[in-house]
Length: 120
Image (cartoon, rainbow, N blue to C red; front, side):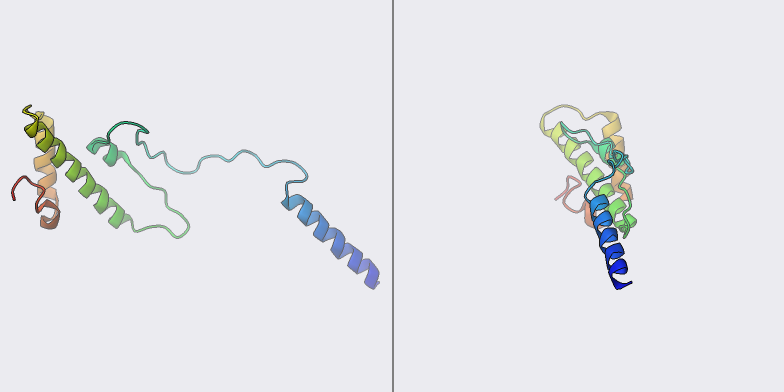
């Protein structure tokens, strides 16, 4: 009886190992389960690109409020830089860009705006 049980255990271990290394067929191709970050692969990123970013939540997750705050700050700083570049290049920034910068500045806490609002 002992030898029979030993043989059954050995056969089971061999079968599990064989399946684990891919024997018995292949797995189906993985399907994407994460949201598309919608960020272009090339070129400069703008505020609209940052606004479209959505991160997937893993098993342990992430602090959504911290990530959202950081993305808001990055979007604000991109707007401020684009506005400042337009001023330095001598071209008038678009009305939409000025509206976005002023609206974003009103929404940002003071520590984000210090040194970034064109005043020193």
